[in-house]
Length: 133
Image (cartoon, rainbow, N blue to C red):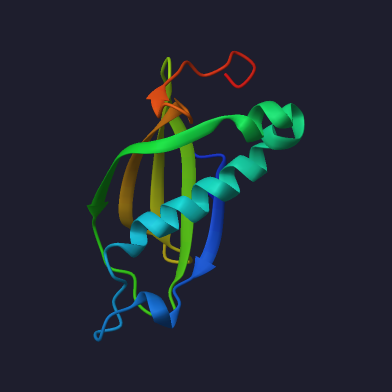
């Protein structure tokens, strides 16, 4: 079940390698969870199948990520990661992710991630193609 305002979510369990000595998830893992969730989000949208090479040749790099840690995940928890696009700029996409303790609907983290479309040879921002918009 997704949270209000979200059409997409994915679930995964906290693995042993992601925790510290107190069985709490390391803070850096939250951004890994975001990366997994965003990858699943793009697969869910079907944009890769719809646009083919245009989508696969378009390169987004994370420009900024902000994590608001509200409650810890511990070993064995099931994480539900909800993803939506908050803003579509000229060359950037802002995504909001909410990480919830599945089954309890406890909001554990909110992540805002800004990704910029870049021209790989120069690393400079370029406009997002209209077909992707």
